[in-house]
Amino acid sequence: MEGKKFAKRDHLIAIENKVQEMWDARNLYQVDAKENVIDKKKYFVTFPYPYMNGKLHLGHGYSLSKCEFVARYKRMQGYHVLFPFGFHCTGMPILACADRLKKEFKDFPELAICTSVESRRTMTKEADEKAQYGVGSYQWDIMHKMGIPDEEIINFCDSSHWLQYFPPIAQQDLKRFGVAVDWRRSFITTKINPYYSKFVEWQFKKLKDAGRILFGKRKTVYSIKDGQPCSDHARSTGEGVKPQDYTLIKLRVLPPYNEALAEFEGKFDVFFVAATLRPETMYGQTNCFILPTGIYGAYEMKNKEIFICSRSSARNMAWQDLTKREHELDLLKEIKGDQLMGLPLNAPLSKYDVVYSLPMMTISMEKATGVVTSVPSDAPDDLAALRDLQKKEALREKYGITKEMVDFEPVSIIEVPGWSKMTAVDACEEYKVKSQNDKDKLILAKDKCYNKGFYEGILTVGEFAGKKVQDAKTLVQETMIEQGLAHSYSEPESKVVTRSGDVCVVTFCDQWYLNYGEESWKKTVADHIKSANFTAYNENCQHAIEEGLEWLCEWACCGLYGLGTQLPWDSQYVIESLSDSTSYMAYYTISHLIQ
Image 1 (cartoon, rainbow, N blue to C red):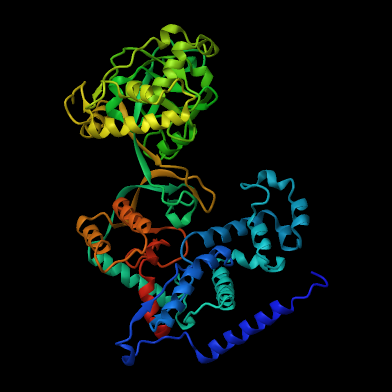
Image 2 (tube, rainbow, N blue to C red):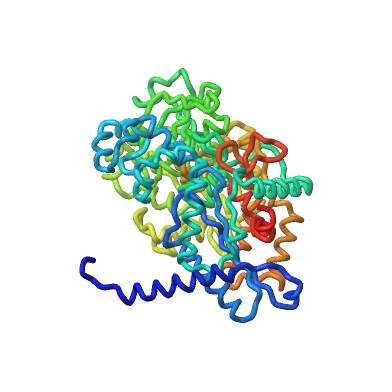
């Protein structure tokens, strides 16, 4: 600020600079392994190397401060402390940003001479409508806001320029921050650093020779746009999200078809398809639910069948060999949910020959298929919605639903010790659920029903009566699929968006993967993290590591797009960003000797 004096601040900064110059002159933090320190206690500090698609920010400084404090604290206690620092460049983000920038310069060549954000936005006002990304989200804007001179931004169309530009800036900022780092050991990843690349190749050859890396088809979260599996580090949204497996139940629409579906009668078999996690409960179906305001598609599948479902689920089906044409959607018609009310349906395994499609206001069109099959005996949400329709004549009239369409009683299908034969009825009474608007109460009731019913329940109807519910689930699913009443279906547990802006699907991919779920390997790690040789320092951290070990099974370790190191025995693939980052701490011990 003009006229404001900063003498005290400037004095402190001068002291800081003088001390840092002294550290550099004395090579104070350059640490080597020497014979005369064998008896001295050693301490090795590492920080997850930051990704170089931009400058470091305050979050890095906050997290880094913990490493910085402990390194200095241990040094003051007499430990021989090594604190190195590297920079990560592997994966999709840098290449995706470079490609995006390249497209912007191609679409808007005037960018090369445009010198301000305001003039550029004026220039591209009409072109914005054609762009695949919104106003303000252009890569050019992002680079400009980083403080990169406008005339230099075009250089970042070359992905290798990012690797030359940002790591030196990050290192200079960290030195200015005052970290106690041995900078001789610093490195960047990808094949631009042949030494680190060879280290990763060596690691993967060892893993393959040990039988830890396998090849085959497996379900994976996949980017259609990028043409490859989408690993965690390649995601802007959805880190840690895995494929969720469902059973796709086919509820046949019975003729005569209503006006919305009349054009398909006699030409196709039409099905409402509902994705369920509980196929063993299909014996208790009394209806299905549709979102009145939802936009559904009539998609042509194989064998002259039409599936009524959401677009997001149809997109997943296209990549799971369910659609008429592989990887393509054949949308015959879009239909609003309120045009699909009151249709007669045949629900497989139900005791009722005919059930009806009814309105439910809480359905998400982004989760599963937008069609919900209803089992009110064991699902509190279904029971509450059905009771609302039974009690509220005005609600039925609004959607053209007759009393006969909702005149169905819940069907007892599961016995749970200490409960009646209908867990949803018991849970709704316990939590005093009055309608489908009691959302918080329904969450409690649903959790209790699911846990009790699935883990303690015994199936009482159908071919597998007498079996535990958790055992019957797979048996019922397999039988329904064999009989053509259902399909296997998967989608991401929640929305996954790549750094290139693509919403991911689940598909089967031929790919190399690390078999982390192999029992002997998993046991070795589990024994170690529970031994005296391992300390997490925090109970929550310990639990998180144990949970991660439990769910981690088959990990896709490479892709076809991105920066990095090529798989040594199959060079069309590039090792992905997390898989090349599991042992880099070991590389620090030799990096200063070989680079």
